[in-house]
Image 1 (cartoon, protein in one colour):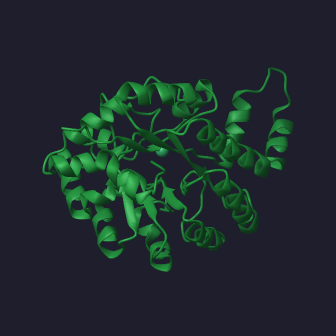
Image 2 (cartoon, rainbow, N blue to C red):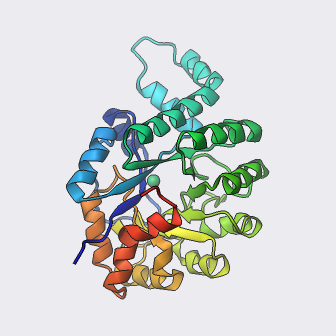
Amino acid sequence: MASPIVVDAHMHVYRTKAEGERHKAGYEIWEYGAKPGVPFSRYGGDVDDAMAAMRQAGYAHAVSVNLFAADLAREEVLATLPPGTDRARALTEVDDTMGDRLRAFNRWACAVGGTHPEITPFVAVDPGVLSAEANVAHLRELAALGARGVKLHPVVQRFSPDDPRMLPIYHTCVELGLVVLSHSGTARGATQHAEPRAFAEVLRRFPDLTVVLAHLGGGSWRQTAELARTFPNVTFDCCEIVEWTGAPNAPSDEALARLIRDVGPHRVMLGTDFPWYDLDHTVERVMALPLLSREEKEGMLGANAVRILRLPL
Ligand SMILES: [Zn+2]
C-alpha cells in the first residue's frame, strides 16, 4: 500500500537556531495547565533544521507560518545588543524601523520558499505595525514572491480578528487566494481575541475566505465545534493541542478525537508547531487517536492540507 502524503501545515522557520531557541524559551504555554513530560523538540528551528527534520520524518512538504510582533522584535534586539549599548536608544531605533523589519522578515520567508520548494511561505500581517493600505500593498508584493497565506497571532499582536484595520486585508486575501491562519486559544486577562468565537464575525463577513484556526481552539477548544457547525469556511490544524491532551484544560485523547469527528476530519490538518514539537512524534500522535478511521487520520496527515491550502504539490 502506498504510504500517505505527509504535510506540516504549521511550522516555524527561524533565521538562526539561536533566534528560535530564544523565542521558544520566552513563549510560555500555560493555557492547558500543567502536564509533565510534554516532549518538546531539541531543534532551534533554522532552515537547515527544518529540512533535516522533514527528511528524517518523511514529510513531503511544510508550510512556514512565522510570527512577527513588535514586542518580539524589541525583545530580539535587546537579547542581541552588544555590551555597553544604550538600550533606550536601541529601542527607539527598533520602533522607528518596525515597518521595514516586518517587510524584511516576510521577504526572507518568501526567499526561503524560493530556494526550498518543499516549504510554502505564509507571511506575517500586523495591523499595529503597518497601516491597512501599507499592509495590503506589501501583501500584493509577497503574493508575487510566492506567499500563499498570512499568519496572525491576535494575542501577541494585540488586536481583535474583526478589527476594522484588518478588513481590507481580508478582502485582499480573498482576491489573491491567500489563506488566513491564526493562532487560536485562551489569553490571560479579559480580552479574548483568539478564542474561536472571536473569529465568528470575520467568518460571517468573508464567506469566501479560507480561515485556519491553529490548535483547534487551544484552551478554548470547547467553543470549536459550534463555530465549525456555523461556518463551513473555517478549518483547523491540530498542532500543540495534540501534544497536550490530558492536561487540566486540554481534551483527553478521546475528547480530542470526538471534537475532530464533530468538526469533520477532512477539515483538520496535521501541524507540528516545529521547532516546539518534533515532526515524527506528531505523526505518531495523530495516528494514535481513537474513534477515527485510518483513512480519516491519513487525510489529516497531508491530503487535507494540500486541498485546503491549495499547496503547489
Ligand atoms: Zn505556531
